Length: 173
Figure 1: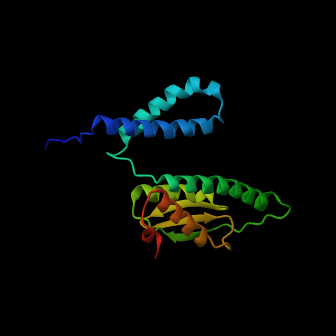
Figure 2: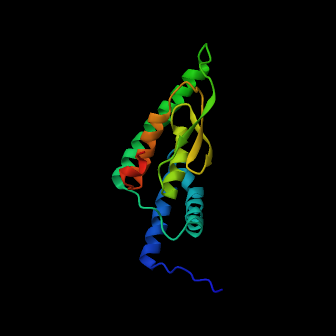
Figure 3: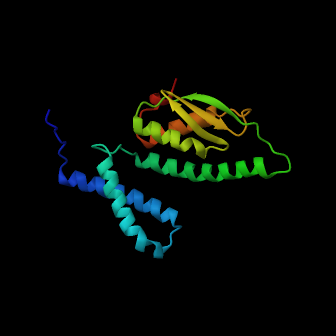
């Protein structure tokens, strides 16, 4: 059986490459904390990573909503900080305030890329970590099982849906 290869028009391929390059350059910049001297290594690494990511990715990148991206970045920064403070508060005080456990959460998103993003972002929420994903359920490890993560998980899922420009009804029961 002959394999057919999807033909991508050059402007589309260039736009995809530039998008990958921009995202990876941003990640590199954050990783090296904005140090200019790190670009000596960063330029070839980012270029190679962009080429590899294009080669490994499917025929098209998911559409990202610019408004959704800004909202996501704001929440990402806020929740990252809040999560770090919360874990420090629970574990470094005189009394250890944890009661580890698991909760199951049903993911309502159907888009594969959005689901992967959601599962990877669960650990941003204070005291949570995505442990396993099976079908539509993700097992969430919690520092304190007495907490109710459902409202935060639903809010995060809605934020990811907005990031990917998915309809709101994709996150409702």
